[in-house]
Amino acid sequence: MPEGRGVTRRRMLGIGGALGLTAASGLSASAALARRPPITGAELRSAVTLPPPFQTPLPIPAVLKPVSTSGGGDHYRITQREARAELLPGVTTPLWTYEGSFPGPTIESRRGRAVTVTHRNELPVPTVVHLHGGRTPAASDGYPTDLVLPAGWPDAPSRPGHGSGHGAPHVMHDPRAVVTRLTRDYTFPLDQRATLLWYHDHRMDFTAPAIWRGLAGLHIVRDDAEAALGLPAGPRELPLMIADRAFAADGSLAYPSLDPTLRERPGVHEPYLGGVLGDVILVNGAPWPVHEADAARYRLRILNASNARHYELEAVTDDGRRLDLVQIGADQGLLATPVTHRLLPIAPAERYDVIIDFSDVPIGSRVRLLNRLGSGRTREVMAFRVARRAADDSTIPRTLATDLPAWRRTDAVRVRDFSFRAGRLHGGHGWLIGGLPFDPARSDVTTRLGDVEVWRLIADVHHPIHLHLVGFQVLSRSGRPPLPHDAGLKDTISLRPGEAAEIITRFDGYRGRYLFHCHNAEHEDMAMMANLEII
Image 1: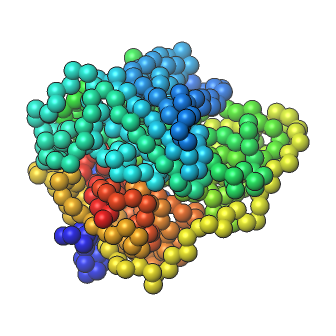
Image 2: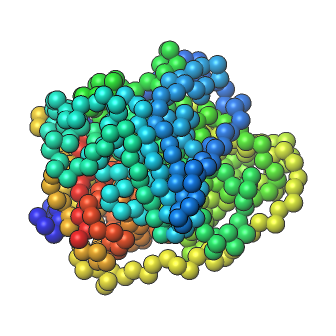
Image 3: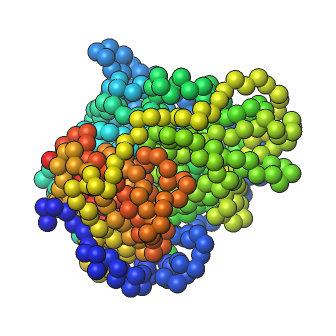
């Protein structure tokens, strides 16, 4: 179908009956819909003694220095390698890393100044790097079959994986794959709004366990307009990568892979087909950390880097008072005006730019960042200990940005419908878009550069849907106006069970082959991706 894969309006309305297919997720339709809000996935339990909360200082990922700044751009080098780190106090954990750390080093760049990152793969398996949220040419977007092979890896795979027809890796079935050995240069023009991006592995069928083992890092784009606003900066701007994990008895990261080597057979064991949840909440790689703060405003650059866990964040003082979370930005940069929340939901891969004000918090007391979707230990995320009075000349302007697109429904040249649901896949379980599993050799959606489109999305269980290359605006949810946290320009939208949403976007930037997919990483690995061709 050259114009795109989707479903008819009648079929869209009938998809409620397809909720019965959610057995593959470990949730029945009734159980999924009864939970408010729902949790999709199953939780692993750690086999080591876990530390008490709010004892470990919050680490701040190191900012990577370029190896060259000539030619009007910045050049970086990152080695992907195995390392060992003390995530839990007194426990050594083997990791797959960017530059030996988890999270990987942060790259800070300027809007419109190109960045080239040379990645060297010294891991035991192929890798792919995707700059999530980047407006990136297709050759550097990290298509799942554009592999970087490690030394000694065969040029072609010897057997399929998954029993579902989307083998691992899938190079033999994708004539357009561009495979390199040992190194690859990724070039990011960064002609885009200032925002928080992140980079992570995107290898076909093995994205979920690779991210779980540590292949994730932050990339911040800055510009002069944002810098002129007077927002909290310097030590009062904190990147927060939130990710849940579980630990085995030997200190390694527990994960229910069918093939723990991640070489041939993708997939997870039956109870975890809906997604893998951990019982330890890490922030910047530390369990339930604490950060010593001034009695002042702080800017929190929050990323949910969990595979499948959703959070609903709330800031609470020791005396039970809830602090405002003032949202100033979304996935793709600043909002037009601030939006104030008391509870802020955040799905896998979503980013929120938030201001929190500690000026009225008693010195010596704490503010805990809680997860209202968690239970037990996963209800806690981190804490701030307000240590001292301090001067604060930061502001939250009433107007943050004037460059947001003004797309209207009447601008759309077409409307497409897509369902995201569980289904049977060649005798096994899978997650499907429009009733079809991912196939890198098939063209699913073809659109012209510059076209504006409206997409109508519907889910069976919780699916965070991510579009590569472009940002979008949320028009509606189940026929009602967008929710407050839908403001601004996004690249990931969290669909709740049985929910339909409409988004609008303009397919600009670059021509080539891109993706859209569920960012529940286990769903993604089990075929919930589709091709987007911009011509």
